[in-house]
Length: 161
Image (cartoon, helix red, strand yellow):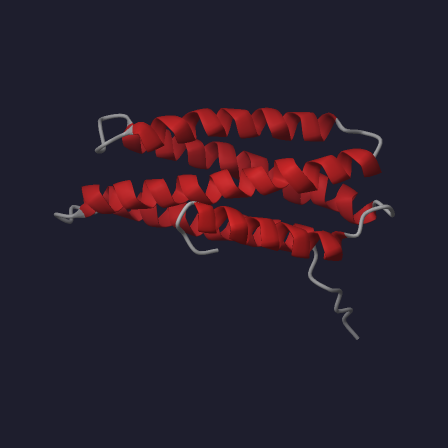
């Protein structure tokens, strides 16, 4: 009989990962397209990707990482994750500043996607297992806190979670 564990904070964060991966794939498909309105759609997708990642990083930094830091001994992975977040934020700022796609816009979005792929693999394979093994963490309760904060941030940005 398969076990059905309650959805936890890691499940919510991983759902965000899958959603943004889908947006990156749509962006890539547009890049290969010769459609007349592809440039405008790329700008919109680029901004949506940036918004999703900004909110995701913020809820991790405000809620998930601090709780995990208090619950596990080896925090090197969290230090790396925060450095990865900063690199992503730098690229996000450059993408968001673009008023229209320039010659480097697509490259910036592509590199951002590569950063995120690497970051997601580390979270899935290393950080989430440590979080789930930590006895001091209520990941199910944290999911609700992450969800509420995510909705609040998305609302502030004029988007829907």
